[in-house]
Image 1 (tube, rainbow, N blue to C red):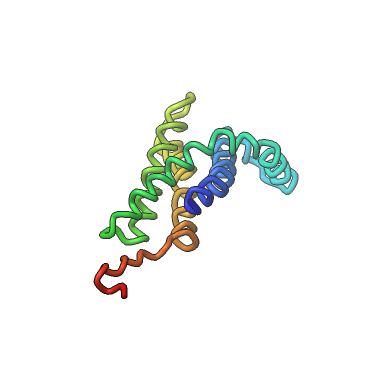
Image 2: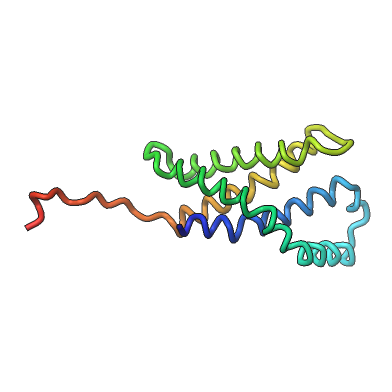
Length: 145
């Protein structure tokens, strides 16, 4: 359960910020970067935070389910699991966002893919660090006296 809470709390926050950065870059808004423009970016991020959770909660929980399934496969080490969740999130985000609009290409595909990859890897790492419970096999019935 902790795993899903970690993904639900942190995934939309990071993903929403990265999506804002990607769309800001793609729109050409960062041609002149100064402190006023950075302040505007953070103001927009704070104002849109509720929508990040509204639209990012379900995808984050889907990636949590992928992480949870992969955690139960004993042959997959944690680092590989984190990368696998990141790749699934990369593909999901890239296919969701990158194919829309007049500009489509490798840069757009990679930028929007990173919107999924980075939160996927970070939340998977945090879930590994804080939510994994060690598996302790039950003692045989004959050993319980």
